Amino acid sequence: MNRYFRSTPPVVLNLIIINCLMLLATQLLPAGNKIIEHLALFNVQSPLFRSWQVVTYMFLHGNFSHLFFNMFALWMFGRTLEVELGSRRFLIYYMVCGIGAALLQMGVGYLEYSGAVADYGFRAASQLLVIPTVGASGAVFGLLLAFGLMHPNAIIMLIIPPIPMKAKWFVVIYGVIELFFGISGRMPGVAHFAHVGGMLWGFLLLWYWKRRGTIRY
Image: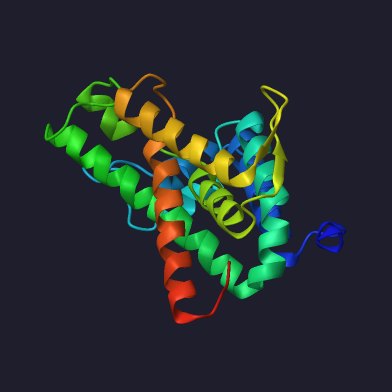
């Protein structure tokens, strides 16, 4: 396993570079707000929604800390997964998780705006049309799910609190927390259903690959 961590494989490296460049573009360029307007993910009922946003949103971040934690998780889990899955399959998995996260987030947003369900973020209807979703978190949560399934007994050291935990329990706890916050609305301003969506689509894709016998875990 140690040899997997000596270098960063190409897909992980390029994803990190692209995300960093996009943050610099949105923060430093005069057209930064326009980039957000065209590439961030808006509610499907919003006049700002465009179909390509289900892909482009995952390469944008709100600030440096948002970028740092997502890229650190991508680097931490993605290196091993890319080596084990292969670069092509890893990229497919990453994109499916990110797009799947967007679809679930959009679905919940659609139901919120139409009044079919309660507004889990406690936002006014007008805000649902103008506040975008950005970040690689949905795809990263998919990576976390994959790592937990493929290396269930690997030890992960938490930051807060600083305690070791097996990857399988780390995934379960994080999934339950995100689902709780998403339904309860206790932590508004975070796309909790995108996180859940990334894990859900990641699980379905891994299950499909395993059923076909193309991967083992």
